[in-house]
Amino acid sequence: MTDTFTKDIVDGLTAKDKHLPSKYFYDDNGSRIFQEIMNMPEYYPTNAEFEILSMQSKQIIEALKFSRPFNIVELGAGDGFKTFKLLEYLVNNEVDFHYVPIDISQEAIDILTRRLKEKLPALKIDPKVGDYFEILKDNRQSDYPSLLLFLGGNIGNYLEHKAKELLALFHKNMKRGDKLLIGFDLKKNPIIIHNAYYDKHGITKRFNLNLLVRINRTLDADFKIDDFDFYCHYSPITGDVKSYIVSLRKQTVHLKAIDKYIHFDYDELIWTELSKKYALEEINDLAEHAKFKVEHNFLDCKHYFTDSLWQK
Ligand code: AVI
Image 1: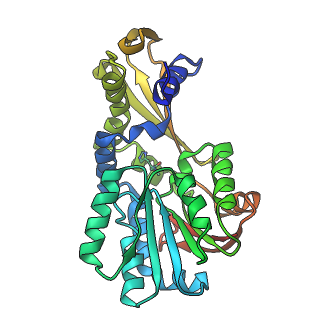
Image 2 (image 1 turned 90 degrees about the vertical axis):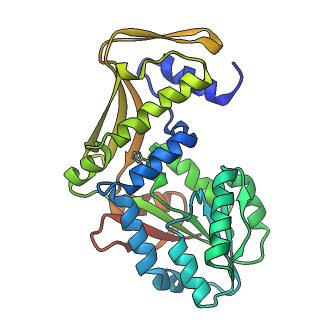
């Protein structure tokens, strides 16, 4: 048993309280299901952040106070849908900058590059595939100031100590004066949050159960998907949305590739994801802890989401 995926899955499924890392949701099928989630009317973060980036591009760019040229480095660019409005604003205003989208998926980067070249032929784009930090280290050599984008509220999927570690790494790999624009989903009426995750269409359920399908394929396992269900719960006090897979029977699953048996009790849970919602003060505390200064919170009109601008 050598690879990290196998180790993470086995560690999680043999722990006293079973858990699986949400980063493994995103195989090709999982990424497609996530697109469906983002298109659901109940999943408000996509629209909220889209509104911020389309209505406040001018204010965001002015707040940078960067000399020209500069770089915009996007971590986990994906399909680049949200960022398009910001890039369009800059290109239309003939601002001198380079866009450096980074993603782990070659396919996502190819699609994004092709689309942007078509829609914004004047854009200077320098796409990169691979690990954020290796690429950030290179970017540190650049003489130009950089704006780092970490959008979509992805920070909410990290446990507190992991979020702190990630922000410290960003800080370490930035130059003095560089800025970070980071998306946070905010605490709000709990019913709105509940409906975005415990959706009536069952798409988020499919998103979670797809992880079992992935384990079946990758580790030649025999999870019977219909014998598992999905549950999630929002705690308005902590701001945590926690998602679980529920075993509907007492059952045993065989991971044939590594000849390992996993036993499940009736109603036993596998914790799959944290999607934390923040208060603005908590965002401030996180920034200060990582030695950033919060310069501005760009909010949507309903105050559901913020793209928070931080300076190193
Ligand atoms: C990617 N991430 C910010 C999403 C979230 O809201 O936590 C993933 C997701 N999980 C269920 N719905 C969406």
